[in-house]
Image 1 (cartoon, rainbow, N blue to C red):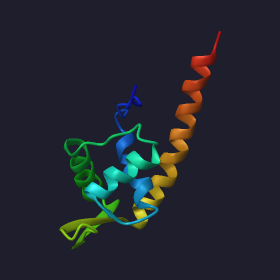
Image 2: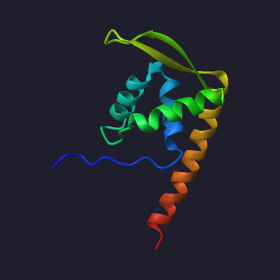
Image 3: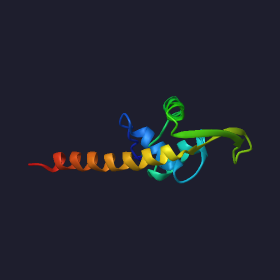
Length: 110
């Protein structure tokens, strides 16, 4: 039996993208692969979700992109976190920790 994949909760994709970009600049396909890799093949981000999230984050000034060449030799837009994006990822990580702790308390309550 293969490993089960999890659907992303609404709003978590932006946090995941920002967090991954806080580590390294990546193009869209690289971002998708990195999220899948870091999640142990549980989270899969499809292009129909990823690119709208990238555009939304760019429009908010949290990331910026520039053209480059991917490791596969193709022209691709590479995204990087802005200063505002770093502030946002720090704040959202804290919010995520509070949220998941609260959910865990509900799950284990008698």
